[in-house]
Each structure stands twice: as C-alpha cells, then as structure tokens.
Amino acid sequence: MPVIKYSKNLTAIKHYDVIVAGGGPAGICAAVAAAREGVSVALVERNGVLGGNMTAGHAGPILGEVAPGGMRDELMGLLGVPHNHMPGVVGLAHDAERARHALTNFVNDAGVEVYLQSPVSDVIMEDNRVRGVVITGKRGMYALAAEVTVDATGDGDVAFFSGAQSVCLHRTVTPRERRVNTTQESRMAETLGVCETRRFIGEYVLKDEDLAAGKKFDDAIVHNANFIADIHNPEGEGQAEGVPEEVKPYDIPYRCFIPLKTENLILAGRCISGTHRAHASYRVMTICMAMGQGTGIAAALAAKSNIAPRDLSPALVRDRLIDLGVKLEA
Ligand SMILES: Cc1cc2nc3c(=O)[nH]c(=O)nc-3n(C[C@H](O)[C@H](O)[C@H](O)COP(=O)(O)OP(=O)(O)OC[C@H]3O[C@@H](n4cnc5c(N)ncnc54)[C@H](O)[C@@H]3O)c2cc1C
Image 1 (cartoon, rainbow, N blue to C red):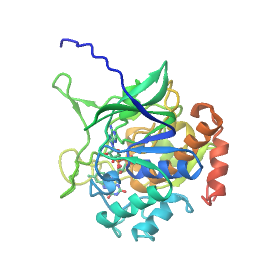
Image 2: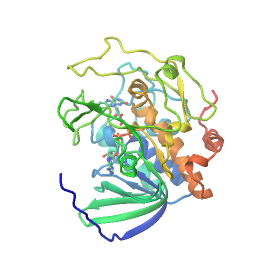
Image 3: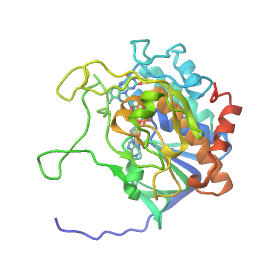
C-alpha cells in the first residue's frame, strides 16, 4: 500500500492534569475520582452520551462484585439499583435513560470538563511519554495536553496509538483480518458492544490461576473482585465451555494498569493487562468501575507530585482508597 506523509500544526486548546479517554463505567469513575482529588480533568468521549456499554450499548444488569465502600456503590445508588451484588445470577437491571442523566450529573458535580462527540484519533508523544491526545471532530483536529492520561476506551485506543504492546486479536484465514469477540448483540443500542478487543501487556498480567486461587496482592487497588469466567460461545448462544467457571474473589494489582514501556499512561477497564480468561471475569461493569476509581486516584496523585504513574507507590493509592471508605483489607 502506498504511504502518504501528512503533517499538520494542531492547536493544543487546553492543558489538564489528567485526561481520561473513554466515558464508559471505567472512564467515568476514573475522571470523577481524579477530579475529587483536586486536579483538573478532561473526559473525552467519542459518543454523544456518557456511559459506554452501560448506556449506548444497553448492556445490563451491572454485574460482578468488589469490596464494598467504593464509587461503584455510590453509582448504584444514583442508578436506583443499590442491592445488585451478583457474581452471575440474573438481577435488577438499571434504566439506561436514567443512567445517561445520572452519569452526566455525576461528572459535572465533580467539575470534570467533558468533551462529547470527540474521538481520540492519535496521541502526542515525547519519546515514550504520552503528553496528550489528538481529537478529530467537526472542528477538525485539535489537541489536549495532560500530565497523565488514562485509557478507558475499552479498545485501548490511546495505548494502541502510543505503541504500547498488546495481545494480538484472533487472526483469521484472510490476510490482515482480525476477529473480535462480539458474540452477544444488544437490542436498540446506538453502538455495537464488543466483549473483547485489545488487551495490553502491563507490569503484571493477571492470570487464570490468580482468579482460580482468589489471589491477593500487596499492591491491589481492586479488592475481592468476583464474577464467573464468562466466555461466550463464538458459534452462537450460550457459553463456550458449557458451564462457566466460578472464580474466588481476587485482587487486581496496580501493576496491571501500567503498560510496559509507555510512560504517563494508565490503563483502566477491559483493556488492562490480563489473560483472555481473566478478562472474561474482570470486564463486567462493577469491576471496571472499581478499576476506574483506583486509577483515577493514581493519575491524580502522579500528576500532583509530577512523577510517572509507574514510579508512584501503590501504597499511596491504597491509603487514599481506604480513607475514602473502600474496604480494601476486608
Ligand atoms: C453485548 C454485551 C453485553 C454485556 N453485558 C453485560 C452485562 O449484562 N453486565 C455487565 O456488567 N457487563 C456486561 N458487558 C460487559 C461490559 O459492558 C463491558 O465490558 C464494560 O462496559 C467495559 O467498561 P469500559 O469502561 O472498559 O468500556 P466501555 O463500556 O466499552 O466504555 C468505553 C468508552 O470509550 C469510548 N471510546 C472508545 N474509543 C474511543 C476513542 N477513540 N475516543 C474517545 N472515546 C472512545 C466508547 O464510546 C465508550 O463510551 C457486556 C458487554 C457486551 C459487549
């Protein structure tokens, strides 16, 4: 294919302490958690509505469990489904329309600056450091700069544009074609929800055996996550493995959110560092919300102290989560 060289001067319209790309369950919690730490935050979302799969994707109910006391509990209250702790059983689903309003108020009340209809199309790099994002919208291309960027796009677009190493999607027999797991379809959704696309390699890869053993980590920022390994049947309805495997409540360490080699970038949501089977459990919305809260606090702490997220002590994030009432040690 011929290569065309294209260069353009972009206006960097604003500098933030933290940019969160992607306004799904993980991104919303990351943005609000960071803003509540007193830093300036932009939340950049490609759709015209916040919520990701929770609203535009019409996915529900909000499944999974994590240690109580976190932002997930606060959000469930706002959505009107406060007692929805489920490792897999059918339960009360949120109202997607109510969620749109509740989530908008949630981020606005925290002072987050929201950019809707704003797909991130590239990153600003300085060596291996992410310095900001490029957005392509109706006003053309422009840039937002930040000390720390959180990639909560689900597909890991920011990490991909930065050159971070991801696990290959399934190859097919057709050259250059890749297959993603889209084995369920939500009715009347504005966007096609995708279960699994890119997973990035981080400082630690959460493994199948960690979930089976209910492994605990000293640097955990998500504690007692719990949901079945929900691997959809690529041939049609139901589960790929017949009966889905139960897991024991497990931790997700801070290292899973820090991509190898790329600096000033934190992963959050379903694109974090884990195996295919681990992802089949931690991708549910409750667990993604808990990831968002932890990573948002990490991003704010790193930005405030002007250090790379990789060099931030996870103990500081844990202490802050415990201060806020998250039962990290229960
Ligand atoms: C069909 C289906 C059914 C599901 N059912 C359930 C269920 O019942 N219960 C449950 O708990 N989980 C369910 N899940 C899983 C769950 O919805 C997702 O794994 C979860 O929403 C992931 O959260 P996230 O914040 O990482 O990503 P997402 O919810 O995907 O949010 C990512 C956000 O980033 C935005 N974005 C993407 N790219 C860009 C870009 N380049 N620039 C700016 N913004 C961008 C997207 O528009 C989106 O708003 C389901 C998933 C699917 C596909």
